[in-house]
Image (cartoon, rainbow, N blue to C red; front, side, top):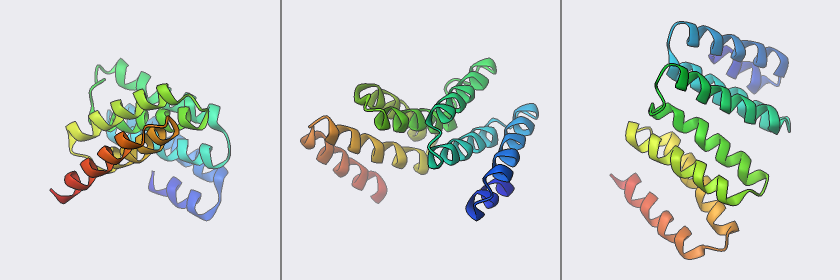
Length: 151
């Protein structure tokens, strides 16, 4: 996974994709679901940067499928999959579905205490709420995030 991230940072996208796919496969095989999901998130982000949103969508759903097969549907790192799906729905202007996915991602991230998941989720949710014209809810969320960070 680290090799794939390094290749991505250097702009070697083909090598990054190959390395991340290998990380997903190896991590899934040895039941290291957290690493598999992080590699999926990293590869999906690479696809988004390349404008390959449908591929990112499929990849996030693959992460959910892998987790469901292993009966781990409530695993906190799955929050990355839901946040990613929410971000994609936002890009496609499916704001109500974006809100639903982002809230699920936040819930899972908070359950596991993974600040990165829920901060990404809150950032996406605030954008989504603003796009829905719900500025007072956005400010409430902003205050909630400030309080959570202060803990």
